[in-house]
Length: 456
Image (tube, rainbow, N blue to C red; front, side, top):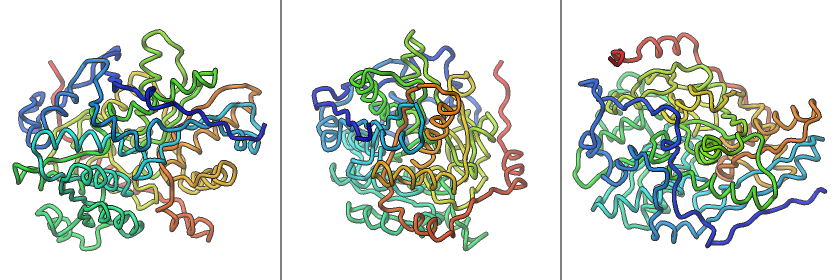
């Protein structure tokens, strides 16, 4: 069979609750620490950055958290999202494996990011917040928050990592269309940005620097809060609508995944597809292999240290235990800008330490090759970030071919690449090369990790 198969849910089947993996973990997450006292942070410590509703979600141990009806109403612009079986890709690979992908590129912003941008804007609006500030890498998160802010009449300011700001000018144009302001980071808008530029006027930027700039602005005004597109527990929570829908759709297809694959940068889209399946397994259901795929040029899960670290370069955030390359690490400017973060979500890091997931890394050119193969057989041009998940799925499918195994592979295609065509042009021109981080810089960044006393 060479025809695509699409599995669609109706609006009444859209999940009414987010799934919280913390309720099913065999071992709780390590505490978030205040960098001054080295004691666990309190809700009051986080109040300058987030509304209390999101803080409570951040620390919740409840398995299910209700999705507000106004948020579900907005979700109906693009949700439930389709699940496809990639028959043509299977045939091209000559694999006996069944390959399915959950497609998140149909949202107004073109990625999975509105799944958390909309509820974050909703809860902030309810709390009386008038302005949201954030950072973005490739621009998918900044675009999504700009979209969400426009729905709720909120100001949005976005600090975009400079190398992505230059690589992807149309992302900035979309943000501005939605009414947001977008600055190349490091910028002259903040004291921290100016300090970075004073040392290096041509600094390419990093997500850690952009976070510092956004946090600096957030704490200066009472009507302003910070919004984050990945890493934190409440962000990963919001994305679990992806996996919950996929579980219903896999049942419609009368199968269940043997392998679940997602690309990982900060961890949000990976958690969105994987956490519901992990939780289902922990509660006695089938336990698929869960594979996190990251870029070889920023390999936090495969090369990072599991340790307490700052989430930003300017050391304005609390300390979280995560797989980290060091907050001072600046990754090279490869095109998957959404995967260029020095750390991994604490929850994703924790399940990696518990042995519940695997992690692999691949080079940029190999991932683009996989993305082009996918586009030519399935018709969707993927974002550079999503190419990593496609590469991971293809590796698994070819393994099945070599071993003669009929397995079901599910991956999350987290966004389209319509604003990333410069990178594809470079690939076709032979100008796209594999980027490599500096081993000496990584060693220095890891040597600079904060000293945290062992718990008594």
